[in-house]
Amino acid sequence: MDITLHFFFNLSLLIILQFFSILLIGISKNQHSFKVQAIVFSILSLITCFAFTYQLHENILLNLYLIPILVGGLYVGLGPLLGLLAIISSGIYGFDIGFFSTVIVAIVSALLFWRISPWFFKRSVKQRMAIVTVMALIVGIYPPIIMQINQIPFPVFDVYFAYLVIQPLGAAMIAFVIELTCNTVHLRHHVVKSQRLEVVEKMAAAISHEIRNPLTAAVGFVQLMQDASISKDKSDQYLSIINSELNSAEKVIQNFLTFSQPQIESAEPLNINKELQFVIDILQPSANKNKVFIELNGSDIYWVIGDRQSFHQCFVNIIKNSIEAMENGGTITVEADSVPSEVNIRIHDTGKGMTPEQVERLGEPYYSTKGESGTGLGIMVAYNIVRAMKGTISVKSEVGKGTTFEFTFPAEIS
Image (cartoon, helix red, strand yellow):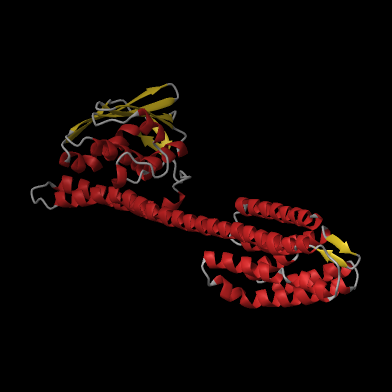
């Protein structure tokens, strides 16, 4: 059974090569890696078979070179190349009857597998597995028959068992792993494509969310201006807010793709109380609609450095979330104070609150406590704006009692 044992050894080497090929496919991010690895595996497998060949007689060498030709020819379309490589490898051992037998078998097998490869790929997985096994069985008959025709003595049972059992079994095992790997690669590509589509969908929802805030405020003040009884001063104030919100929407559209690393393009000193009052005025119609009272505490003037529009966007997002957290109405308290070199802003609501796990995940991309109705981008954008202004955020919340956002910014020293 020396030939059988040697063929098992040959097969184990092919399986090891295939294992490393799969590892390389798994760690590679290149979508074309699978085909490249399949080509490399086919060529290395063929070389390995001839490198570890069994010498039955002086002129007869036995190995499993037909498996790489079969698998490479059917799955990769490399039949002619592998057939030529098999002939060259056999020629290294000499030009004898074994060489000419290899030439005949390699040419016929390689051309056959190459020609039927397109048809082969149109079959189902089970059919492809069956075809590989049957083909390996058929081509396995050639070597023993050739030896019998040339009246070369050989251990009949050992040779036939090696070619008609081990070779089809090995080809089936390798084909099974290839099919499994193909399926995994296709699933991975499908998942990647689905994730990209999901990102696009979430990005579209996020852009809509960020633009809706200023547009909602603008629409609210347009509706207020329809009241014929409002004064000229109020009308001018509303027009100013509408203009500011439309400019904010335009800037959001222009800069949204850089939301992950927002840049403070036009840093200037900001009067905290004035800017917070502006944000509250913007959100007042929404607060009134939800029976929410917003109060701004503190009369001292504090200054920070930042971009006005980004500052507004940050606190509009936070206070709007607080309004939406109070379904039955309530109070939002906004207050500011200062310690040496720092300005603190606290926003406290009496809403439904959050669990520690929800607080921990705030600021993650696409995480929202609102379920399917939220995108999570409002809070994420707010966090990123605060970081861009070299500030920090801390959140304290208790379910049923409300949430407090505390912002800390470097103070502008006048």
